[in-house]
Length: 400
View 1 (tube, one colour):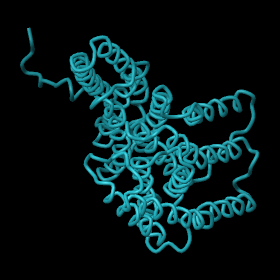
View 2 (cartoon, rainbow, N blue to C red):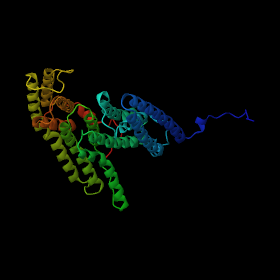
View 3 (spheres, helix red, strand yellow):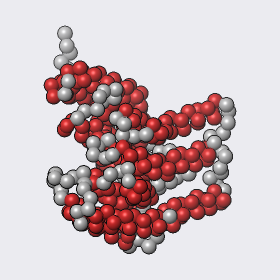
View 4 (cartoon, one colour):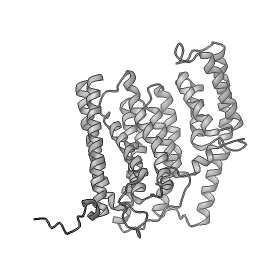
């Protein structure tokens, strides 16, 4: 018999915060799995039954891998080591988990033929959505006061996983060069190097803070998303990815030299070298690149207006003449340094959309705008509001 005189206790009130978190994770991942299965069924109907089934298996596999990592990392759901585990995941972590679902769906397209028609936009769309959420999950966590070590950890893990899947998919589609996979391997090589240092009882030093480390990684992820769009020529993408890789890989090399002790971040000489390199790369070099970009942008804009060249958008939504005027406007804004990175990105995308990426002048324009999209328009720029956006850490903790 049940003793009715005793107050009843709900399961939720007696469960530990970790148990509550695990129950919530099971529910979230089960729901994600069911949606994934439904998505695979839709793909099997509109694409191919075999492809839909293989997409489902791959997506569920990556989702299961994420679930296992999250399960082990749930004890990190606290603000600091001195505070208890929080029973709530919070909006920020929920957004990050959603980003992980998009990444798992992107992984579903691996080892499948490149889709055509409307479906060809789906891989890029998934990764760009994941990138957009990357800017807002950390912001949401801070606004709600639920910034946790779990959020920082999971954010970094998804960044690494996405930067493995997206370039691999781009290489399989023939959109990206093989050397783009160096970006995929960089963080894992970095972590393996630290493990090797510790295993051989060698010192491992802390990284100095950097306001640009995460920004460059964000630009790199965004670029891979755009590269998967079915609109750019492979030659244009090869140039852009190489330019985008330079600051990213240079940063990893610098961080490794610091972590391994080859460079001492505490010395004044280190800071002087970093300051000189930063000033040259972000203030001096963009100035001649702006001049070249303005000349080429004006040139191709005028040829479009005069009807001396065709565009990839001919006969579609936009006229060649309109593209020409838009190209001239962007070139002028870029020359003045107004909205530097934004204008550079817009001119880069317009060039990739409308011009033959194999022409030497077009490749030069793509090179200049790719560089300035990452590092800005440099000295003598009138207005660069995006600089504040780059400096802020919208997406969580910085990573190496």
